[in-house]
Image 1 (spheres, protein in one colour):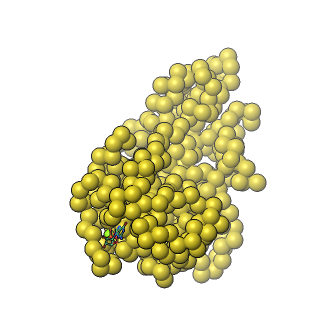
Image 2 (cartoon, rainbow, N blue to C red):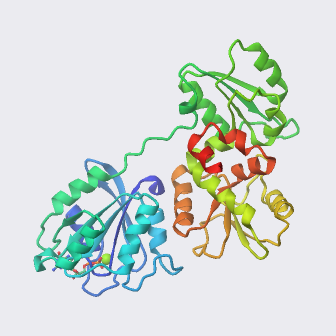
Image 3 (cartoon, rainbow, N blue to C red):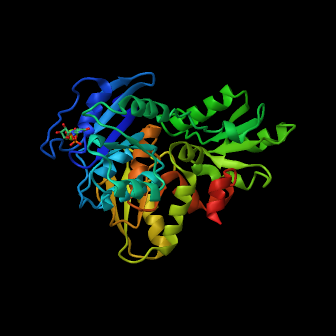
Length: 398
Ligand SMILES: Nc1nc2c(ncn2[C@@H]2O[C@H](COP(=O)(O)OP(=O)(O)O)[C@@H](O)[C@H]2O)c(=O)[nH]1
Ligand SMILES: [Mg+2]
């Protein structure tokens, strides 16, 4: 799928040579080059094979203006970099840095997007002020000329070297020692016609099995018996959010306990970030706006974390007049600046990458964010216990 391939965005002021550079990289015309600034309007993308790396999607962006306030709602840059895996920032060798460009570096760092800076059109000489500015910001750059074919091979090699080779992050394997024991407690609703395990359960159980973990899958009723039948305490118990409070009391404090939702939130997002987002709840005031975002329009709610329940709980808990807005499907609204908090669904149908695109956008706009899974545990008062297996996130709770 095109959305899952490594995306390389080329960013820079209009006329800095983005389209020329992409064409030069591949030795043929992929995007139009023009001396009239603003030829590329909106992002244009093209799937290509970048050897020896593999398939990539090249994104030629519309370009940033001198006046571009990146965080401003008009800017397409947030969108372009949120979905990127790597950025090539083009500067014109004759110019100095603009505020927009300095801000861009700041934003790239903020979402930890790897990038490279190419100073183009060096046949005119390089502006010494630009060099000083880059040095002061401790930014390394490559000097190139698309026109005279200078430095292009080195740049291409470096880009290929720097492209992320992302290993799959763990769901559960880092939490359990080799040959360890895990009990999965699932809530099987006998009334429901759909009596399947959900995708997050299957993925987690599968990973545990692949790691050679001794795996027990039970319903909550069997938990006591399961615990007493083991000679050794389990290394971890993973349960559905909806039953967590009912079973927590039966599980000795020294046994680590978490939820499928926590494992998934870590896999598809960032637990520390969500824990920071939770802090926003206690500071909410009358008239504050919260966005409840769902990636698909048919969220069944595998637990009690339906938007209606979350809204109801927040009203009761805060005793404030909060304004809730909803966004279902598609992408997040472009302007998020009016929201005090975003409560995002767990994204069970979104790939990791698609979820990350959304979370990047939220982060770039400085809006605190949590997801349904964390919200549920917080509402139940279960968060401190089920977050304790994750030391970085547990630290944020303090
Ligand atoms: N002198 C010079 N001109 C260049 C160089 N690279 C691109 N250009 C010219 O700069 C103009 C804008 O290039 P383009 O690739 O369309 O820029 P974009 O708007 O950033 O995509 C075109 O006229 C190009 O021919 C270069 O290295 N030296
Ligand atoms: Mg262009």
